[in-house]
Amino acid sequence: MKESKYFLKVFLGTLGLFAVTVLLLFIFFNRNNSSSVGSKEILIQVIIPGEETEEFKLSTDAYTLREALDEEKLIKGQESAYGFYIVEVNGRLADDSKSEWWSITKGGEYIEYGVDMINIQDKDQYELTLMEGY
Image (cartoon, rainbow, N blue to C red):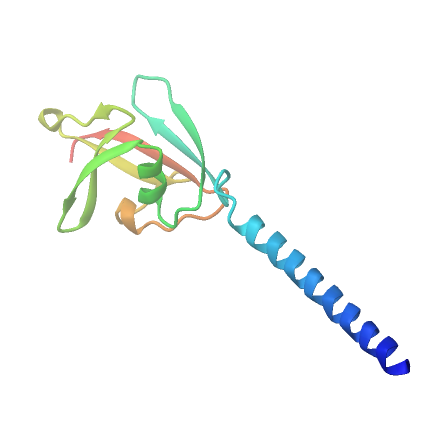
C-alpha cells in the first residue's frame, strides 16, 4: 500500500512538471513567433527639396535598412560593384539628367556606405534625401 502511494505521488509530480514544461515552451515559442509585429520600430523620413517631408514608421524584424525598406516596397534600385544603389524612393525616381541621387543619413549624419550594409536597431531614425549634383 505504501509503495502504491509513493508511486502515485512520483507519477503525479512528474506529470505536473511535464505539464508546466509544455506550458512554458508553448508560451516561449508563441511569443517569439509573432509575425504581426516586428521587433524593431524605425522611422524613415523621405525628404525632397521643395516638397513636404513624408514619414514612415516601420515595424520590422529585418537586420538591414535595405531589408526593411524592401519589405515596405519603399525603394527600387540596382545592384552595382559597390552594393545596392537606390534610384527610386516612394515612387520618386532620381533624374539622371539633373544629376539627382538619394542620400542616406541617420539622425542628420551622412552614412558613407550602402543601404544593404546598414544594420538597424530599434528606434533608429533615417532620412532619405533627394540630392542634386554629384
